[in-house]
Amino acid sequence: VMFRNIVGQSVYQLTVMFSLIFGAEHFVPENPWTYLSPETRRQFPDFCEFSDCMRDEEGVPSGFRLRSGRRYHPFSDEEDYASRWRVDLGASRHYTLVFNVFVFMQIFNMINARKINAEWNVFSGVFRNKMWAFVVSFIFVVQVLVVEFGGLAVSCHRQGLTAVQWAISLAFGAGTVVVGFLLHLIPYTFLPETGKKEVDLLHEGPSLALASRGRLSSERLSVRLGGGLGMTSEQKRAIIERVAGNAGNSSGAANRSLKAMNSAVNRPTFEPRRPALRQAVTAV
Image 1 (cartoon, rainbow, N blue to C red):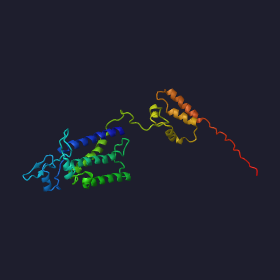
Image 2 (image 1 turned 90 degrees about the vertical axis):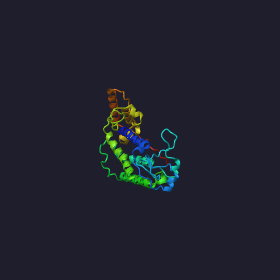
Image 3 (image 1 turned 90 degrees about the horizontal axis):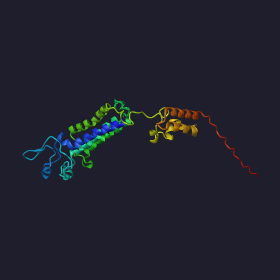
Image 4 (image 1 turned 180 degrees about the horizontal axis):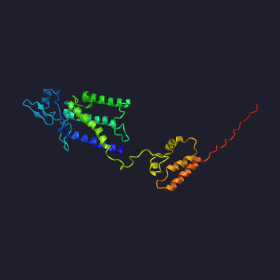
């Protein structure tokens, strides 16, 4: 289940990230950067905050779609968002949106992470865990403050994001919950080491693979068997050999090993006699 969810969420988030980085200027709406004064615009006549930039008779730019904030054009050494613009005009709104969408996908994915056993309702008991609710709320508030008021200190746009761009961030973030729901429709039984519960060492057959991976160590066995208190070394050894035996053994050999274990467990134990302590008597 975990492997399926990790792969599914990775594919979704990478798709969103690449789509925004290389294609946001084609579909994300934009508003004018009102903090740019006419004097500043005259100093940078080549700059326009819109990808579909149009200028009136006075040279005032207008448009509808977001300008790319990429350093260079794809597969080219030609500058796209010039470095001097970053210094004098501020960070692009494009990459501020990319950063915000990424964080919101992680926030919403924390809802999916609450359920790890293929439960369908990931919102069940969401408000019962006060610590989880506090952490998510804290991250959300800090993210809003960073994007809207961080500015140059955190390489975000000076005016933050527009209302539509915030809605886009929330939509892509909530998409992780939808993807998590759809992933339940994908079978996972064909994947290795998935769809299986934790091994019960007292009832499952021997597995050399599990033993070689450390799941059947003597320490874990002692914990599962109540700490191994009151057991002799022969009894512990018999149990370890039973559960950590070769997976290719036949059922008859497994039964004989189980009988050997039972006989070892039922064997009466005798406390060795302790030697009497010699006391030295000193004559006065």
